[in-house]
Image 1 (cartoon, rainbow, N blue to C red):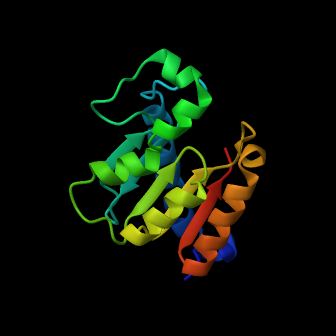
Image 2 (cartoon, rainbow, N blue to C red):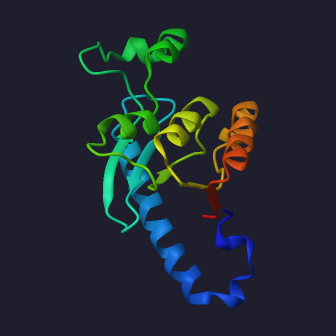
Length: 162
């Protein structure tokens, strides 16, 4: 089922105003969470939200627990990419309950690998901010797959203008 934003805002002003306010709050929270990452080049954050708008889990990108988290590992791109756990996966793994029907707010669109895990876990709505740092062009192939997977799965997603 597609999200209401495909309809004209003039017919549902109170629905859109309320949704926009909450979307912005959780995107702001994801932006705060991303600052916890030690990655000097790419910091990302995620917030998983229950249907009642309470927070189920948060995550940021970083290395797994009990593994070295040294600056030189972040500076070595092949080693970093081999070790890093994306913010979405960290949020999913930190959740202490099933997330079926929940919403995911992220600081950038999910990559194709993370989105399939989120779909498998039952995330039913995805929200991310409009691309402001060129991430879309850098990861264009992955993000194109992500959007096609979301369309195929029939879940709601939204890119929010900032």
